Length: 357
Image 1 (cartoon, rainbow, N blue to C red):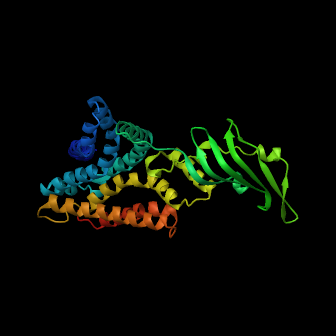
Image 2 (image 1 turned 45 degrees about the horizontal axis):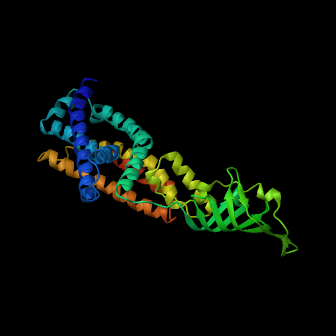
Image 3 (image 1 turned 90 degrees about the horizontal axis):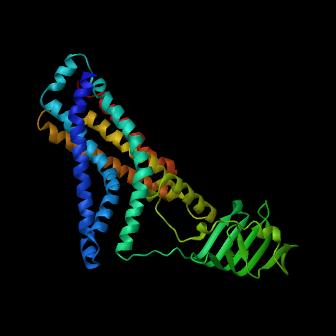
C-alpha cells in the first residue's frame, strides 16, 4: 500500500497536467481554425467562449489516452532512472505487485471514460456543433428523397419520392404489403400521405390486390392495412449520422433504422462496438508502459516513452485495419472493434512476464 501511494504521487500530478495541457491545445486549434469566420460574421465573444467550453469534454476524451501513456511512462521511467525500483524489488515486491494499483486504476478508468463519453461528451459536442453551425450560418435539411423503408419485419415496404420534414408528408408513395410468408398481398399507391400523430393517412389511395398470380385494382384501401402504417416520421428523415458522434441509445435506434430500411449496417455496428472497446486503450497503454519501461539503462525516459508511443500507434493502426475489414463485411463487426484490445492485452501480459525485476 505504501508503494502504491508513492507511485500514485508521481503519476497523478503528471496525468492531470498532461490532460489539461493537451485539452487546451485542442481547444485552441479548433478556435484558430474558425477564428477568421467568427471575425467575418462578427460573432460575439460570449458565443465563441460558449463553443469552446462545450468542446472541452470532447478534447478531454481525446487527451486522456496520450496523457495517461505519458504519465505512466514518465513515472516508471523516473523510478528506473533513479534506481528506486531496485529497492522495491529487493524488498520482495514484484513489478506486477508494485504496479497492480495503477493497472486497477486504468481498468476502472476505462469504464469511467466510456460513461464520460456517453453521458457528457456526446451531448456537449452535439450542442457545440449545433451552436457553431448556427453562428457560422450552416444549415442541414431533414428532408429526404428516394426513400425506401422496410417495416413490420419486412411485411410492409415504403417507397416514396420525397419526405418533407416540416409538413411530415410522404410524396408519391408506394406501399408493398406482404403476407407472413412474404408472399405479395397488395400494393397501394397515393400521391401523398400525411402523419396524423399515430399513423400515416393516405390521400385518395389506390390498392392493387394479388389474386390468382395477378394484380387486381380495387376501389379503396383496406382499413386493416391502413391501420398498420405506423412507422414513425423520424425513420424517413435525412438524418444520416456517424455512430461515433451519438450515445449508445441513439446508436441502437439508428442501427435499427438501417436494418428496417434494408441498408448496410456493418459500418454502423462496427462503430457501435468500438464505443465499448475504445476506452480500454487507457488500460492497454498503462499495461504497455509497465512492460516496456526500463528496457534500457541509457536515456531511460526517452527510450521508454518512444517504445510505448510506438506500441500505442501500432494499436491504433491495427484497430483502423480491423475496423476497415469489419465495415466491408470481411470479419464480424464485434471482432473489428475488440480484436486489437484482446491482442494488445495478451502482448502486454507477455511483456510483463519477461520483464527484468
